[in-house]
Length: 166
Image (cartoon, rainbow, N blue to C red; front, side, top):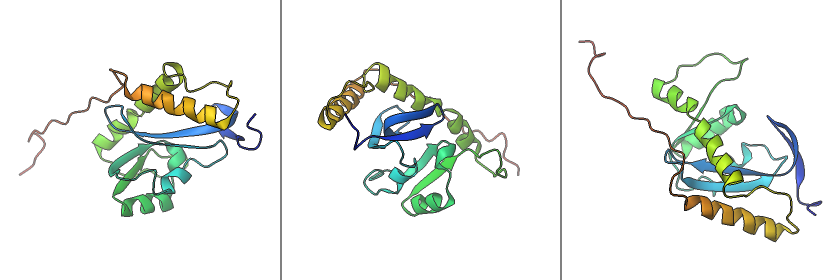
């Protein structure tokens, strides 16, 4: 049905045909922004779109697929600090301990994706038109926003003076 619209792309799970849903969430599991692209679009491309990250600032934790020095500088100008882990062939770089801990908590985004797919049922192949596909996707995202309990990150910093040297 989507012969002229859907494309074939590759993810960590292998090849797939269809679309990608790019989402930005906060530490409470709430969706801040989302974007749908064809499967063959680079993951970093939506971040370059001004509308996708509108009114978002602070730190953006992403996986290794978003590593790009050019993108890092582009986002930094807009008040967004892109934080990713490093690839195996990269040199180590200094990182705040809180950033390192929050990078490990990226599994929350996978939990959000899982809830969108399984509870809100945004993933199936029975659509007969692009409009039907988009209506189902938007309805699933709205349903997710109304879920009473969303996956969240519980991260609190404790300010002590134990490590302060005088």
